[in-house]
Length: 357
Image (cartoon, rainbow, N blue to C red):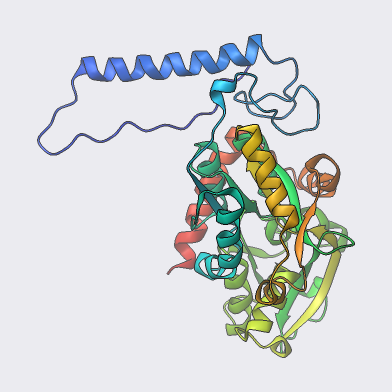
């Protein structure tokens, strides 16, 4: 059995101080005991884990982490930390969600803060470490959040009839000579981040059927975010980019781009948009209150405009509604374990650094 994946850090010594070998020994011992405790939980108390990390258990086999058996492990924070996937500038979403976070504070009778994250990996680590209690995760990274952070998806933006979906669009500049997918051979194509569904995983799984293999038939350049890919195509930095249709539409509606400056040369089937998920170890009463608050909320006009007409959080389950996403990930060879996540963090950090140059 693999040891639990539990990133940690030893605080740096203050100026002019020395960390003694005895202190280091105590810290290592504490870490060892912590890992041993997690391993004991994994070996002695969990009858089924599936693809979840050793920190979690899935005895009801619904593919997400069960609530802790020990009530002492429940979390009931005085301040609820909420965030939304950084598919665009995080500050944009903090403003968009302001009416909701204000409402959530009143509904739960707790302080609610929006935590800006700069990458999918940072968001996942925030929930895994206990710093994030509920948030919206991008479609692809939702799989990592479930397996490695104990995230329990419960909603997607939608309306009274169904959840909201999006397509993968391959976009090019309006006056580009590229007319069809085959024309992308030998070109520079912006993918978003390694964990992005529409911006990387789906293209790798679906494009071979179109006679196009990313990294082999065209050069992949990670832009860091969907908006970077879109504007990069517009400025000519990239020849094309696979992007989420909902992000493209929002940018056009805000006036950040002109839709007429682009052409769409290929569209995929529909995927669910970002999931909203809570931390598996929230105190049950708080968890139930959160769910009630989310499901009863109706988006004000400005949120509806920002999210393509969606007016509510539509109930979903990871097991049923993310099946197509998991299938795409499997088709692209993506694994959602600790080793893959460490590689993801490295690639996302590199992509983010390049996007800021």
